[in-house]
Length: 91
Figure 1: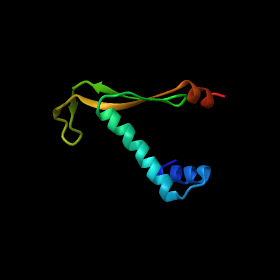
Figure 2 (figure 1 turned 45 degrees about the vertical axis):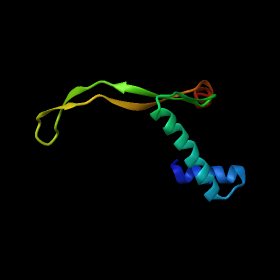
Figure 3 (figure 1 turned 90 degrees about the horizontal axis):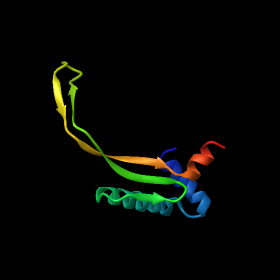
Figure 4 (figure 1 turned 180 degrees about the horizontal axis):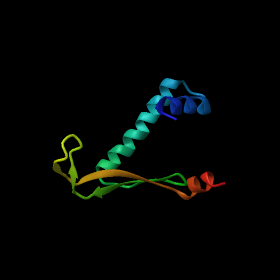
């Protein structure tokens, strides 16, 4: 499922136009992104939690010529499924 599929599903379920559904999805994803940028945790009950994790720096290799390169540390988004999500997947 991609964003267009999600928009169609929301529009059908809520009985709203696709344009409005797409706008609501954009608001939701922006709110989650903005919170993660600020270092905040986003929890949606029975769905899951979005957090930011710090990935360590490491020495990698350039695949073109095999030379070593230093890959800097970086922040990455992490999603952990909630209890309701896990139960629905395993029922």
